[in-house]
Length: 307
Image (tube, rainbow, N blue to C red; front, side, top):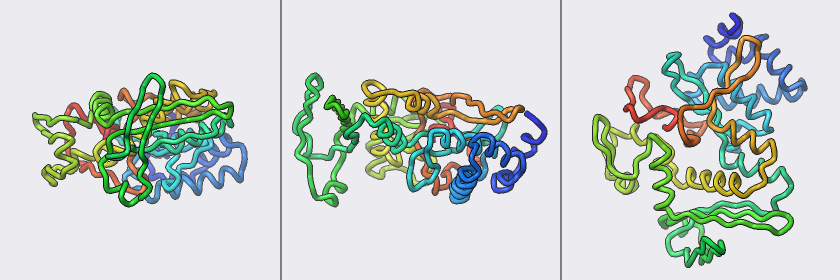
């Protein structure tokens, strides 16, 4: 890494973004002064509202943001198309920013193909599911129209559906039990059942019922705990699009780059390093600080990318 890049990496992002090195890299990458100005304003705003992100190395923030920009996605937390999530780099002793594709980003990229007439994902509430035939993909539900009532009911499953312009369609339904098993398998920070050891957790059912020590709140900062439905809907979109959807190069790139650490090398080029997790981690909203105490040593089975 060049001395200039290394020096910028020691600055706060608010200072690094205005250096000639960063401005030059942004202009060369985007090639349009007006687009560069808009990009700088957008990423500066996104970082400013997230105290946890401000502690990340500026290089990974900029590289991750440029990765999102290359996909024509916005870092705005209100749009939720992609996120930069704090990730503890134990080897380097720093916190990097990890690029995470949001579920709205999946939808945006799919719709740009011009091949989808409809694309949707929804949580199925208690009393709505009548039947689902996995072979014929016939999903029958008695949808509750009262949104306030729906919000108060328990979720029993998740449904995703797309329809191409030519009429071809796919429907996918997972029960909440299946999603719980999926999260338990792929997220190191989530556990369906109670765990023992140095950092014991209650079962997810007890967590949902509020039956846990509030002093241990940091153990449940994973968005599989905080926003299970949101994580489940992202998973459904990944499943249905990656298996049956049209995977144009832009979508394939987005899927491949989801959950990577982007950085800048000595030649001022962006490169990516896959994060050490089996499935893209959950989203930390850009306007919320991390709830993990910096002084806290995490359990061996947990890493910050899963929190």
